[in-house]
Length: 200
Image 1 (cartoon, rainbow, N blue to C red):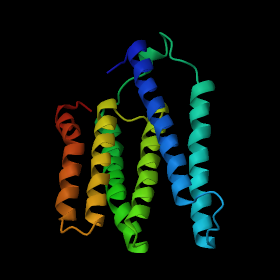
Image 2 (tube, rainbow, N blue to C red):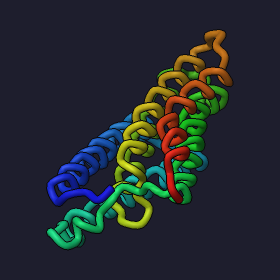
Image 3 (cartoon, one colour):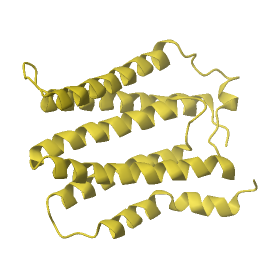
Image 4 (spheres, one colour):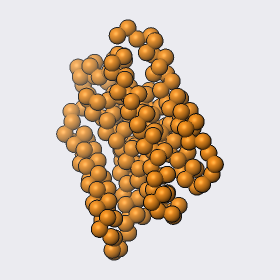
């Protein structure tokens, strides 16, 4: 499906906002996890440096898309399309599966390492912000962009999966496998239907 110039500008604007919000979430979580003036251990310092590097990378990449990427014209917008072939949808489904699994598991692993739910919440804020910004940057790129509808579904259900992971990390007796399968099914349900109607 070829998108008009107006649709391209609106869609890119949505993902610009998502990346900006993710940078805000990353900066807040960094200040909560590693307050200024603290003396972290060597392992914690390594994690902090990695988190700061990821945040810096997101910020620099966003600036590149904002100021060093040409705006869509009537010519370039005609080539800006949603990916609709079967081969192009396979990586999207695989990415959605790994994203949901990582977001659900991250609060569980952090709860095992640190027996403090407040730290788990801070770490979950960081991972969710990191994922949201990653989706936004992928959508702003030209080569790795996902189908818009699938990107929205992936974003929504992965955020839902993060709430499931937080709930499980509180110690409630919940079936992780069934919830993971449920969110995964809804996440790419329409993609499966479109596979049947694809001509490629």
